[in-house]
Length: 128
Image (cartoon, rainbow, N blue to C red; front, side):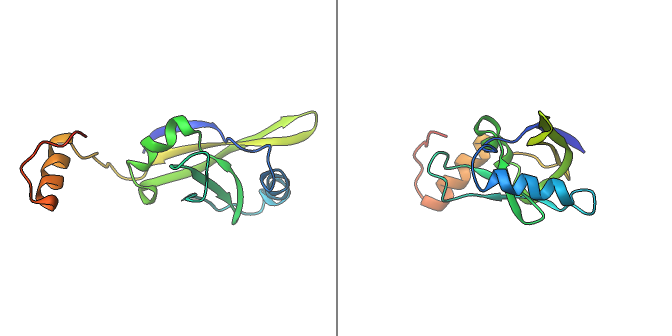
């Protein structure tokens, strides 16, 4: 698998993420299920991707990379737990790694243009 991103989650200093991270830390050694989901209600970022540990929201993928990850499709991404970020004996964040499960090719701009033209049934050039 190809690693797309390795880093710390954002938005971890806000509730409910603060208390959720503490709860995940207490149970992470038993079993951890991690998944990604779009947060359509996020007013700060229309492409926000929320990270869930054992069903609890613990933070967001940084805005600088989330659009690129969405291009692969969330179902094609594998999320791995790397570690907890600690400060003064407190858990203050989570580090994860995101990889592509299968080799996925992004659509070429010309192919996208042809698809848009076919759907709209007009031969004009559309900026992508």
